[in-house]
Length: 160
Image (cartoon, rainbow, N blue to C red; front, side, top):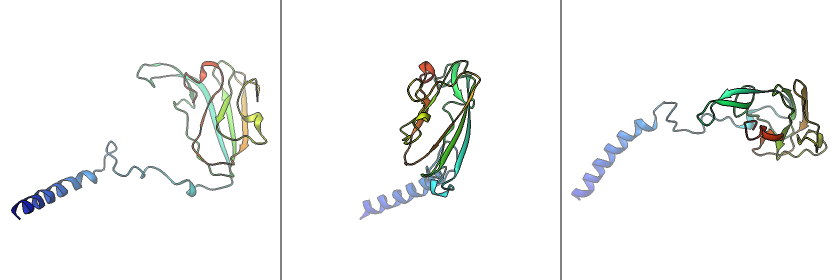
C-alpha cells in the first residue's frame, strides 16, 4: 500500500511539472502541429488561381554553403500552391535564368492540355530567357505534388 501511495505521489508531481511544458508557447516547441495548417476546404472552390513565378538565379545556402541557386520568386524551395479539385490554374512564368527553361507539374494529369506539361522538346518548346509563358490548366485530382524544371541542370540546382 505504501509503495502505491509513493508512486501516486510522484506521478502527480510528474503530471503537474509536465503540464506547463505541454502548453509552452514557443515557436521552437510546437505541441499542436496542426495549428499552422489550414484545411483546404476553407479555400474557395472552382476558381481561377493566378500565380506569377519569376525564375532567377540567387545566392542562397540550402546546404549550408552559399552558392548560385535557380530560384522561384527568389526563394528555395519555390512557393507552395494550394488549390481544390475543379480549380483552374493560370501560372505565368517569367524566365530570368539566362537559359531556356520549362516547368513540369509532376504527377498532375494534363488531360486535354498536355502542351502545358512542361517537358521541353516533347510537350512544349522551352521558354527562352527574358520571355513570359502562361501555363493554363484545370486541376482534376487531389494529392500532394511538386513542380520542377525539366531542363538540364536546373532541376538539381534548385528549380523544384
